[in-house]
Image 1 (cartoon, helix red, strand yellow):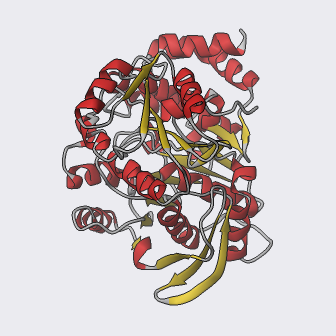
Image 2 (image 1 turned 120 degrees about the vertical axis):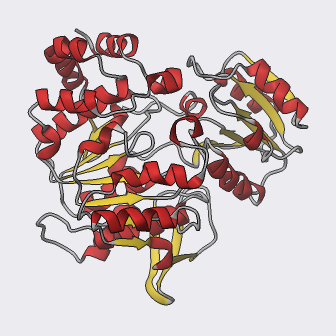
Length: 435
């Protein structure tokens, strides 16, 4: 079996949320537990950190992985979804799982896969945990896929649980109020396991405090401990912060090999998590210095992509995978202050979410190029164009994301800014391929 054959089998045979949406969501842990029992319970054979949240969980996961790698720990990282290559989901020390290991897993366990009939995500989780156990990682950073309580990753008992923030997303599966959504995220809090909450919100904080009291888990809100202030003007590629802890200077300068308006809150959460994380045995520099080294080398260590990523100049082409109301609001507010002559948006959305709240955030003065991502869930470009026009955002529909970006580049002057956003899957189609 070739690698592409293994992927074709997985995509064809298993329900995949990335492609078909809610129909692929399994509301119990039975299949994951059955697969992992068959694999000799690999999730019990490595230490882990478990990270949930509406926005920021991927960024925080990569930051903590980078810090663990800087500490000299063999570090597994499980994230979802992927942009260009399935193997982005499963990494050790920043290196993708090999094609051969994916093929071997599918070939060896195909009969059991067909017996259990897991979803695509359930199988990915089992594959990742099996790989981490076989490779004997020192620690694995595990990002929740959707929600928390019923997410397939929620079979681990981590050293630390982290919940970045709560806002509206996937209401049809997680609930239509912030307390209900928080309740699903709080499902990752385990008895006696400490938990870091990234942001304090009056509707979600009581939910987390109640759950932590029930499980006997120590709890801390990162934004009540740390404050980050820009130490130098923001740019397209890197960020530099001064860090204050409870009002006092804690760190004069923290350099981050990433940029974007989402960073400030996520670095705060990652720093608090790092401070609370009880690391496996290690030797080397002080813990804070390790964190600094990790974030300074974030992209090199973890291959972090898709957030506030420059892919072109003259005109500037910026990709950002913010895809819900809270994430897009932050991105669009930051773009307003960016230097440009004319603003262009290449955008598309999935068809199982309401687009009205997010379209209302986009500026009417920009030029729009609408496209459908090449997945079944993609919202048809013509339907999106009509919806946007009704909200005062006129533009043209294109047959593909790449064609939309080509049109934007043709229309843009060197001093213009083109932003590709709206859906992870739209961004995925224009990111450069990395091996």
